[in-house]
Length: 231
Image 1 (cartoon, rainbow, N blue to C red):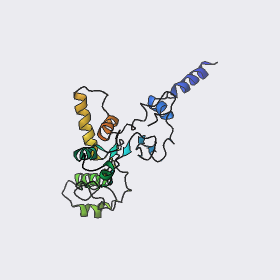
Image 2: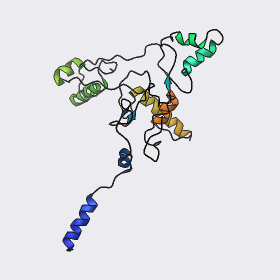
Image 3: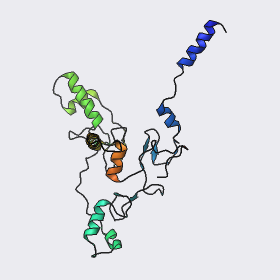
Image 4: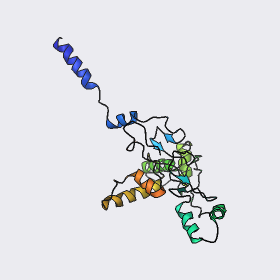
């Protein structure tokens, strides 16, 4: 083979990038796994309590949507049932509505017209960032109304909800968390790391320990056969 053809052949081989670990792991994941629960685009699993393969179930008490793990009741309702031991049967307790918690939901309805979680100034997070950038460029104080009249921002489509049970806020990160829960997870991970505890802290471990879920890990627990664990 002439030297020029040999060098061209070698160059074409070198130009082909090798598969990364991420590519190999993605190839091992079935994008149609657990329809309605697994989002392959975000590599995110939000397990349904109605799926028999899920290792957690919804609390049995009426009006409670918290998950229960290895128990018929969530942690809060379990504590209340123990406190009422001997006074009511389990069936009677489950039939009593749980006292609603104080409403801490942030409103949805950005001033621009988005159906997204809003900040105290009435804008969603994305439009608030746009507003701040506009103010920084102009170098002067400007009202939101004046910004809307000048910039003509367009409404954005709704965002999926945070994956933490009962959290109505929008997701802002690839982890599936809202901004508040992302800060909480980051703080917990830093504390866990400083103490040198195991397993290695990450968002999955935080979710499992916070909500008693054991089905968030998608890749690290896949069996060698390529089929993820039954949970």
